[in-house]
Image (tube, rainbow, N blue to C red; front, side, top):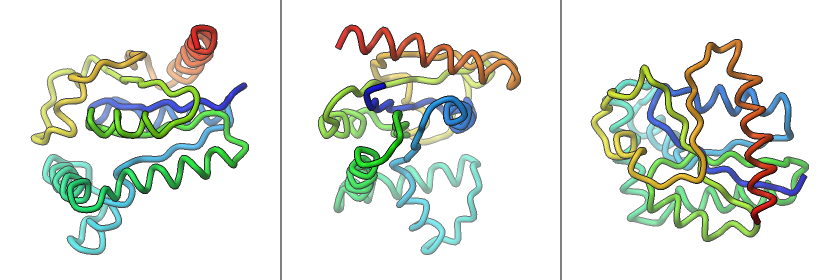
Length: 174
């Protein structure tokens, strides 16, 4: 299998991390996130302890926006991790990015196959988190959409089948 980058997105609580963990059981996967360096700043500078509530999500979104505007820290971090992926045994790189303009910026960096994937879940459709990074994920034109509406027990096989089918289809179109 050729290396493939999948930029994964979805509002909070739709199961993105769980699905990436499932994929890692069936493929050689590396997962990175544009928010990782921002979380470190939030921990050290603001005492954030990992909460995923609306207030914390807004803090992270606001800090990320500042970092993007100041020195593009999230993008630089992703580029470093992407280079590590290219030199690794991993087949699939899942990249968590929320903002459309940041998705487009990173896609230009990728040499080879790169696709965008939106994860949705019916029970989370109307939740608003109070920040554009979370609330505007539906406004981007994704290559693929996976509806994560099955039970956890059923989701692993279903998502991996979805990946296999769509990776084959996308590789053929390439």
